[in-house]
Length: 129
Image 1: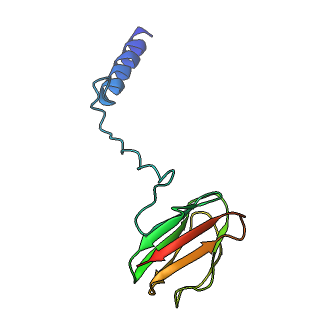
Image 2 (image 1 turned 45 degrees about the vertical axis):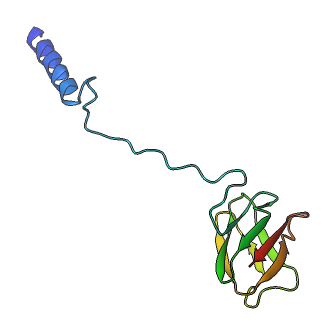
Image 3 (image 1 turned 120 degrees about the horizontal axis):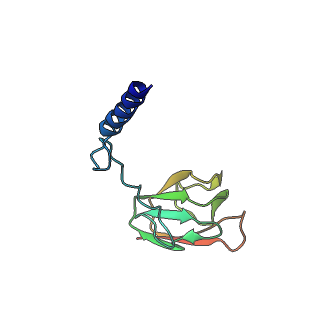
C-alpha cells in the first residue's frame, strides 16, 4: 500500500511539472482585447453613425464625389430620408437594422438635409463642397 501511495505522489509531481508550475512558462499566450467601438461623437471619416436617437455627427462636410457610409451602430432600427433637393443618384435608405451599414455617393455640390422618420427629432445635414 505504501508503494502505491509513493507512486501516486511521484506521478502528481510529474504532472504539475509538465504543466509549467508557477513560473509563467506554461506555453500559452493571450490575445490583446479588441479596440473599443467608437463612442460619443467620434465616428470614422466620411461616416454618419446612427445612435439610439441621433446622427453623429449631426452635420458632415465632404468633397464632391465622396462616398459616405451610414453606419447603424445603435441597438435599434433606423431609416434615412433625404429632404428635397437631393444629390442625383442618392436615394433614401429604408429601415436597416443595428449592426448594418450602407453607403451613398454625393456627386453634386450642395446642402442635403436628412432625418429618421422612426425617431422624431433625429435630423442631420450633409454639406458637399
